[in-house]
Length: 307
Picture: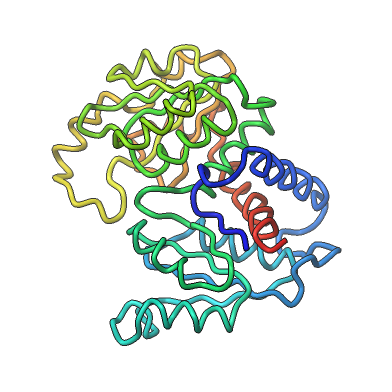
């Protein structure tokens, strides 16, 4: 049984297969409508159970479309509408019940520890739709998008500006697995935890962290950012925004990157904070393609887990 929890857990050859398969599937259905089922119906008779402890737009829609295109079925579990998460039923028992009803689970939750605990009791694979420490499906989509536009990501420079959040954790893991350079610019207070940095150095990652956003963006092939205040953040928002203000991705930052560099954002965006409208809606922005590619990457991840 294969789970897709952290990019660090998956062999680099398997990750490459997932990306390449996603590209191939996308190309095959280029003339089909968005909701059309793939001709092979590879997951006919299979059911994906989705659990949302955190609200979602792209994760929910992309996984729904992914499973429909694969010919499979969907069940959505909202903790507010079930015993799950209410204390009326243990995590163990809920996991065992879901294992009877579905073939695979996608879970989106705030607490990574809770995700790992739940996964222990499942008898079917689970996919990480987001936790506070990891967002692997998003970063796999980012890699697919980059390669679709810029060719192989190996040895390219990716610049991250802003909060050292869950996207950064998955990017650091990806820098090891896909062998690209990652420059992270953030205030000291919002650096990624030392544990992930030590893991990266141990695995000879080409990553470096700086307080200078201009240094990070210099000659980058891609500049990335995310909201400064994530869902569930328990921080003084005013103070955090003040500290992160110098890390806004704007025209000045993009001019430092390579001439044909691209801009990425996982969305949703707080326009005027982490990114200006000029960049978000500019020619270098590929945010809508990123969102689209979530469908194709997730189709590939689901199939990889069920093979």
